Length: 267
Image (cartoon, rainbow, N blue to C red; front, side, top):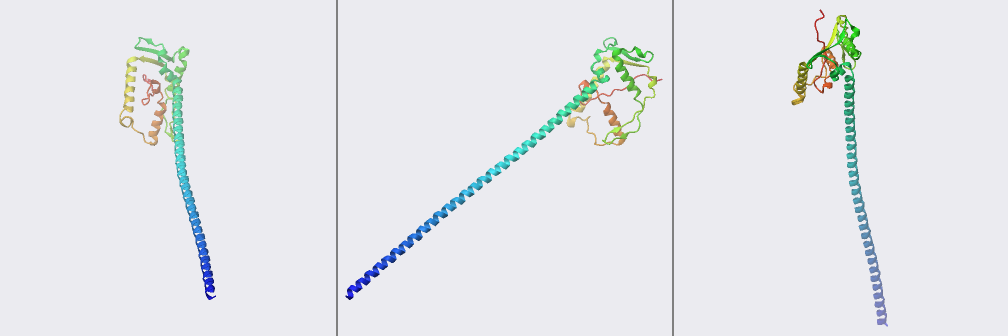
């Protein structure tokens, strides 16, 4: 009886031990499964983090590229605007030069320069004269020449001695000019055609043009002027520049022409 009870007790202990072992194995397997699940979840999280970081890096790269492209576009737009502004300024400058040229070309003196071949000079081919005005016969001037004759008369009569310079608000200087005190003594206006003098005059202009356009710094005879002169010097420069209108009609850019009077004494 005691042996049977001992065997039952041993069997029960064995069964209990096997049950405990099975339970422990189940718990261990469960914990291992949980560990594997956690590890898998961690791996997924790390992969998601890596993907997010990669996406963020890609986004930053694309943003930098977009910023550079936008900067290039702005730079190109600014360059285009500057080029357009410069082109517009250049066109306006050319248009202004054309307007000035046209304004000068249609003055009586401009027409004299450009259309002198149309005048009927008396004399041989190399030398001739043409009377525009004669105080003794003021109505004898041909109708086609009256505008030019009147222009010369006005120019002579209004070219008296200059007064003191008067500075203007825009930086220019105006020199009041009195009426010529010899205006009433003008007796004749005669155009003289002299091919030798004309050739010498043109040669002088060519030399002046070349001296002011060839060589270092635009030519040694074309020095830069200061921004501001003393009042009287500025007056002289302003008056001279206002008279320099006819070089362009002869095909010059730097050399210019100032019409002046030449003739016998008023006495």
